[in-house]
Length: 231
Image 1: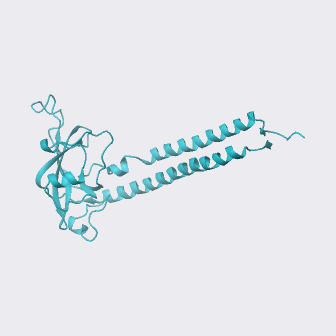
Image 2: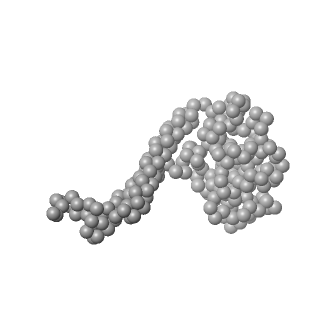
Image 3: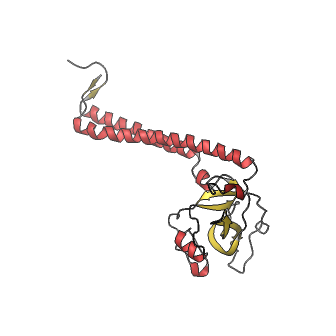
């Protein structure tokens, strides 16, 4: 094999290849971490929910499955979906856990067909009782979400400062929210391990393609030949 690498091209190619491989390895590690977190959450979900009083030493932590909190005060209507995927308004109220104020989802208002006076879609009239909640990180603003309309109580993202003012809740905790248990929390289910593996395959595939392009470029320049070198 005869190979004379181009110095400048190789100088740029080496860190790019290393970065592609590192990203692929990182996604594999993320898949393993996510799988472990999902397994751990599944075990916690099978156990009895934690009593609110037991959360006092550290406070509610993401991923904990807890008993339902008691909502207080007016409801904040935040656009979202229920467990069945139907669009509507998540009704959020404040709740006290260990003398601290948190936001908890205490109901769901399905969108009506034909506007406010229309009928509810079939199958959305009865709301099953939920005997456990899950602690989730405070949601970030989704991409392309519209602006909130506090005057009409129509919210499209969890604006910490504005939500605190609207709920008249000084010291509102904006690290986590308490949501009805509908399976793995969004911060775990949003990107499952299989998706991370798909990302890893993409990065590794790009690394292989990059090496092939590098090799073809050198072959055309006469700097790479397979077999014995010519004298």
